[in-house]
Structures are given as structure tokens and as C-alpha cells.
Length: 339
Image (tube, rainbow, N blue to C red; front, side):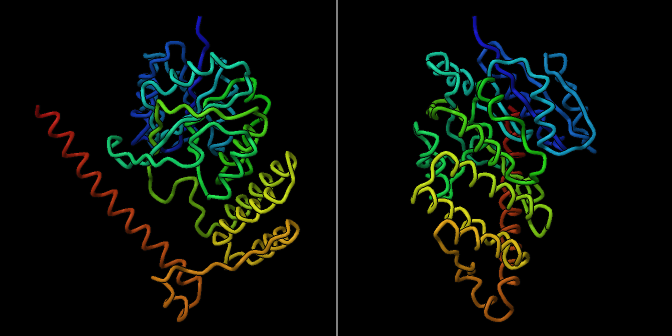
């Protein structure tokens, strides 16, 4: 007998990508799986596209728009699986991702072991995904994993994790107050409740780079800034509750420093609160500076102008790269259809 894995897909206005995502879930070689899509009140054709897959065993439910965290909580409430695979509606899994992790999971002596794998960025063509290993791509203790993440400003994509039901229930639900980096806060709790992280080098996650209106984009939104800072304080609290030493406090200060440009100069109150927290931790934060390319703008017009110029340049660059990749993707599809 094999263990049931629940693949949970929250979706909001993902009409363009949701079919590929569901197909990657259906293509998993692990035989005992269920796929649950929760449409979070989409205003486009997401729900209609998802329902095309109901004849292939995918369960699709819809709810009024409540945010990604609540959609994930709804999905888990419907799940029957012994293990949970979270999957955003625009990302993809390699066919053997779950199978490779479950093979290791079934040999594990603990339901509290957390499993991860490699991941890479792509836009339209998964074959062009860039996989860049970091110091998180190995077996680690919960404490060491978080320390390395904050010390190096690293990231582990949401879909890389495979989580037992026991560990999922121990961590508690997704926090609906958090409008960005809710996955960072959630998996801080999962990691804290685990007895260690196992990295499985086989199997991959493909993380699609989408336009800047994605959930993780904060921009100038006061609500998103406040939610981001709340999530940061929660995560610092989880880490210090586990262990509180010089390295832990220094990592917390590095974490605050990394995110300080998000709040500066638009929210001086949050900047001040971050500085006060750094003081309590025995550190000190430096006010952000722009890179040398934008230093002249900062000298003439101030940091805010330089920051926004850099943001607009990055958005324009990202748009150009997406347009190029989309064109190549279309050409490849046309060529494949012709043959």
C-alpha cells in the first residue's frame, strides 16, 4: 500500500497558467494522489479552465475572494492525504518530484521530517529554467536552515516542500493577516515543528516569474508593508523561542537589514520599529543606499526617486525578457505543431 498525497492548488485569476499546473500534478508518477483546486473568487476564466480537469479526478471548489492564505486553508480542510504538496497555480512539478520524496519519506523513521528539493526560475519555457544551488540544498537541522536562509538572504520555493499531515497539523493554519511572504511565515512554523530537513536532489520544481502584480510584490501598499513587518516579527519570535544566542540574534538583524529598503523612506514608523528591534537584538541597521547606477538620482532628487527609478527599470527589463521568452515559446509551439 502507498500513502495518499494531497496536491493542493490555490488559484486566483490564473486562467493563463492553471491548465499547465494541473497537468503537472496529474503527471506525477506517484500513484496514490488527489488534486484539489480552490478558486478564490477569480474574475477571469480560472474556474472554467480548472473544471475541465474534473473528469480526470481533479476536485475543484470555489469560494468568495478571501486571499491566498484562506484558499490554502480551505484546500487543506478538504484534503484526505497523509502528505501535503502545496502548489501555486502558475508553477510546475517535474513528473517524479513527489515520487522521489515519498521514496525517502517511507524510509524515514519520523513523520516530523520535512522534505525539500531543487527549484528554478522560468517565464514561459520550463526547459529554460535556471537551477542555482544554494547552501539550503542539503540536509539541515531546523535551526541551521533558518540561520542560513537569513544570513545569505536565500529562498526555498513553496512547492519544493513535501509535508506530512502530522507536521502540517502541528504547524497550524496559514495566517490570513499576511498579504505577502505568507509562505515564509508559514514554513517558519513548519520548520520549527519539524525534526529536520531532508534535501532530495532528484525531482524539480519550476517557479514561474510572473508580472509585478503577483502576491509577493509589495510596492507602495501600506497594508502590504504592515503585513510584511508583522510576518517578520513573528518569524523572529519563532526562531528566538527555539534558541537565542549571538548567531541567532545576528541573523535576525541581517534579516531586518535585508527588508529595510521595503519600508524606507515611505514608512518611517516601520523603519524606526525595525531599528528598535535591531537594538534589542544587539545590532544596528544602516539606512539603505541605491546602487552606483542610481547614485546620481539619489544625490539630485533623494532616495525615494532613485528607488522608484530602479523599480521601474527592473519592471521594464522584466517585461522585455518576458516578451522575448513568450515569442520564443510561441515559435517553438508553432514548430512542434507543424511537425
